[in-house]
Structures are given as C-alpha cells and as structure tokens.
Amino acid sequence: MKRNLFTVFVMFSFGLLITSTTAFAVDPPCTSYAGMVDLDKDGYCVFVGAATAASTGFTGEVDCDDTHKSVNPGAREVLGNTTDEDCDGVARVLPMKDSEFALFVKNEYGGNKTLDHTLFLVEFDACTAGAAAIPRTCSVDLVLGKFVPVEGYLFVDAFVNGTEIYRNHGEASDGREVVSKAQYSHYRPCVKTSRPSLTRKTVTVIATTQANLAVGGEATLRQVGDMILQGQINGINAANAGRDSAVNLLGGRVNGLNTDLDQEVADRKDADTAERVDRQNADTLLNGRVTVNESRSVLVEGGASGMVIGRRSLQQVDQSGNPNGEMVRNTALSAGGFGLRIGLETSSGEVAAFGNVGFGADGEGSGADTAYQIGLEALAGSSTTLIGGFATFQSTTDHANSVDASVLDNGVLVGLSLNRDFMPGSGRITGYGRLGVGYSWYATKGMNESGVIIVPGGGVTGLLQLGVNFGAGASN
Image 1 (cartoon, rainbow, N blue to C red):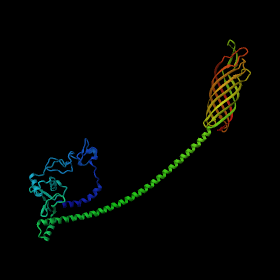
Image 2 (image 1 turned 90 degrees about the horizontal axis):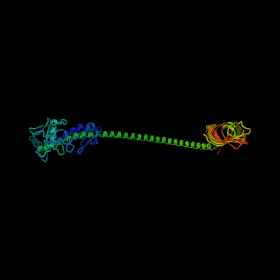
Image 3 (image 1 turned 90 degrees about the vertical axis):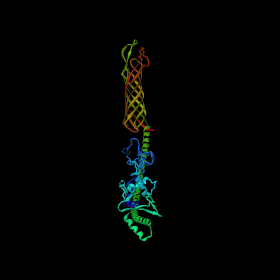
Image 4 (image 1 turned 180 degrees about the horizontal axis):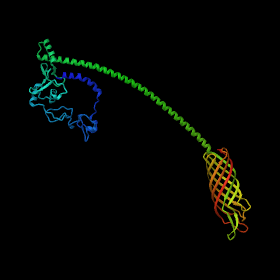
C-alpha cells in the first residue's frame, strides 16, 4: 500500500535532505540545559523547580511523565487505555465502536486477534483528515469495515504460493500495495494475454510486481540522477577543499615568515639590551674608578693666620677683695701667627684637622700674649667654595700685666668655617675664615710680690679668625 507513496516522497524530498544536512545542526541533549532532567532516560526531559522554557532557552518537546520510559512525545499511542503515551494531551481510544473495529480486523487484517492497535491507527490516520500532511489515497468505511481507495487508486492483494499476504505497514514483507488504476490496467491485461493459463491470483502478483518495478525504475533513474548530482556536489566540495588547503598552506607560510621576523626583531632587541647593559657596566666601573681616585685625595696645607679672641676682662683687687681700678687683661686678644691643616678631600667636601699658634697683645701690660688652637672641621660644597662647621680647643696666656702674674685661659669653641680655593687642582691657595663661640676657664699661674691673686673663674669666649694656606693635594 505504501511503496508507491514512498517513491513519490523521495522525488520531492531528496533535495531537502541534501540541504538539511548543511542547514541545520543537531540539537544538544535536553540534559545539557540547566534546570532540566531526564529521570527515566527516554531522551525527553522535564523542567525542575522554577525552570521554564523562557528561563532555560529550551525549545524542544518535554516529557509529560518522567517516571515511565514508555511515555514521551516520541512514543506510539496505545489505543483503548487511559494513558497518554505520546504526550499529545489525549489518551486515545478506538476511533470507532468495538464492533466496527472487529470488522476492520476481519476484513483488513485477516481476523488477527492480536493485532497491534497502533498499527491500525497508522492506517486509520493515513485514510482520514487526521493525516492531512500525507497525500491520502484512501478513506474509511465504518459500515463495511474497510479502507476504500480514492478515485484513481485501488488495493491489490499479492499472493505467495497461493497464500494471500496482508499489509504489514511498510515493512519489507509488505504484500498488499496501493497502485494507480492506470498502472494496474496496463500490466494485468499484458500478463493475462501472454500467459492465459495463469490464475487470477498469479496474474495479480505478476501485474503488481511489474507496476511496482516500473515505478521503482523511475525511482532508480531519479536516484542515479541524484547520485550524479551528488558526485558533482562532491567534486565542487573537493575543489573547495583543495582551495582551502592552498589558502591554509599560504597562511602557514605567511605565519612562518611572521614568526621568523618576530624572532629576528626579538634577537635584535636582546642584542641591543645586552649592549646597553655592557655600556652601563663600563660606565659604572669607570665612575667607580674616578670616585675612588677622588676619594683618596689627601691635602696638606700651611700658612699665616690672624685672629681676634674675645675673653672676659679681669680687674685687679686688693687683699680685701675690693677692685682698685687696675685692669689685669682686656676683653680682646689680637694675634697673628701660622698654622697647619691636614685632611682628606672628596668630590663632595673635606674633613681636616688644623692647628694654629698666634702671638699678640690685649693692650694690658708690656709683654706678648700667646694663643694656641687645635681642632677639627668638616666642609661641603663645590670644588672651589666649601662651608661647614668646626670644633676647637683654645688656650691663651697673658704673660705681662698689672699684677705681674700670668693668666691662663682654656676653652672649647664651635662655629662656622668657610674655605675658598683660589687655585683648584694639585696646587692649592686657600683663603679661610672661622667664626665661633664657646666657654673658657681662667686662673693665674702665680702670685705677684704684693700677694695679689686672681680668683679663678670662667666665662663666654669668642673667635674671629682669617687666614690663608698654601698646600697641595695628592692621590694615594
């Protein structure tokens, strides 16, 4: 019944099958969507919790009973029970009375008491409006209990060894077919004329076979044409694949060239970096050598200096301790002398020890006064002008005064130093100045003839010193 219909469908659907393999992708399993499960493993899922088609994005069919594997949208409906096997919302019953169905079993299926109702439903749908998508070639006669061919078609029963074979719904052993009247009338007379001794049943078998062979031959020719077309398509695909291979090969070569160029650029960068590092190391080494040489410059200077030393004035007193108006020494001692300075010179400054000896007078008495200094100073600045601080121990002595007794004055001072090098280099002519303040302690070194003494004491002392040194610096 179905062989010719299937052939017609192949003609119109083959092109669709060719394009469908490239136009549509296989849908992923429903279990790949969040919020869906398939508990009965029948390939159809249900939504879990608050999941919906909108929230999951799943657009396929869902199971109506996920606890029974035989119930899902792809199952066949079993007629006559209360279960909706195919999940279409209806538990289908027999579309007719039991007595009417019994007539169909008797007339169409040889009285098969164990007939699968689903098989009957396929035939029933094919011959009713319920299968409008299938070109119908028959209708249903409930009175006679038969499927009736529509105008232009007829049912032909085939026989094997004299036994009638009933339809088996499209399977390989199908014996009864639906053929057009033109096909049947064309082949049956020919068979009867050429072999008049054959029975009607045998003629029916031969005619049906020839009709189907003719239809099958047309289908074969179409299949051959489709195969040729498919071969051409395969050839085009092969050519496209060849071009793709050529493009890929060219792309690989371009990528290889780019890789080589990138490597060359990277190598050049590495070489430049290494060269820059070498230059930096060389500069660092050279600077280190220069720094070491500069830091090892020793200076030795000597020269003349003049100083004014401020001291507390002392007045003579009588044995009762009362001042008598005679000055023992004045507040300022002016002295001139010489000095020596030894130190270490760097690129940023100097550290030096110095000593000075001076001779002078304070205006009291007829003898010369003396002054001694020894100290340390640290200076910083440019290569010609340095400024810093100093600390010194200073001692002065009045040798002749109104009490005919020497007055010894010892003190410590700190202050500001300023150096100016007028001849930078190995030879040096340096002018310097020191301004400081401190505290000193004084006492007499003896007693005069009248027994007058100076009471020991102390007071603030100051220093203003200017001088010039001549010397040299030597690297060691």
